[in-house]
Length: 447
Image (tube, rainbow, N blue to C red; front, side, top):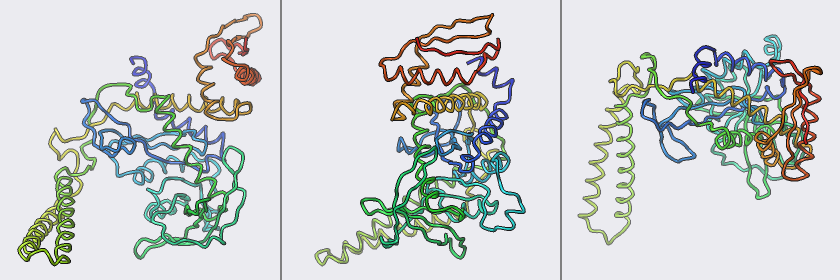
């Protein structure tokens, strides 16, 4: 813990993360053109920091914690993460914190001249869940000529099945699959405002139509479907990181204050909002009861009168609460709140440093898995074998005269795994890695 704290405070983890992200994107510009964004709540169970509550879908509870917004590629490999204590959700973080960084670091963006000549041309594409499939986010991104790709919400219209054509859909990372797809040009509407989007639908074997929309109108329907349906890789990334990389683990204890000028939800407004919702539920329940009494001849007039009186009482209270909520500011500055209500944050540097190390480790593991996949059919099996390799026994033999360092790995549990690991070690030897201190060339062998 002390070593991590020393490295975090004497270095600059944020600058390191940005430099690595830029380097990873430049090394794989094709995948950097499609960026997957999703949030993950890191739950906090301590009592040193006063963190706000937020809904955790995997727990189905509102728990205290911070929101981490991860940016990955279609293979699940992370580029960087943004942690927020106070935020208005993914769209707010995306526009304010993620997009400015991507505009600087994503390689291969078209020039301003090219963008001005082709009004449908995009810089790069951002992929996210249907939570972000709104006119406000799509239009805000397109103002900077960033394409958005998401599932469409509230789909009611069914397209004729004869519109769907089976075709080959390329998958990121290689390979392809066949899907029945249809495509139309449509508009994303919000009140009087609208914008053109491309809608692609996939027809499943059960007859269900999965709808996808994108503002990147130069993409073909195969690319749109292939990129959107690759979003499961990011979900797998979160699950794997929680199970094997302790993504939620705390690496330091303590808290620090946030600037008093930051805006947060007014606790008084929040309490009034809860009361309004509770009163509204009571109103709907009483309205249903009154309707039932009206339709039933057996209910006497007294009961109907009582139902009307109870409904009127709730409606008066609901109107009062709504008026009070309307007059109450929804947001206030942290500095204007009493000390016990002010949100604080966990000390950020240690977490940022360990997040960078975890991203490097996950990317290194993924690269090893890609080599093993030539010999093993399933990715899960390849990842399990890599984890076994990391903890397996071995010998180290330095040779000062030859300037080599030979790492001898003991054999695995079965011949099939031995063959895969031997091939992996041969590939690593061909890459001619050198020890960072001695400069000795590293040789890997299975014995």
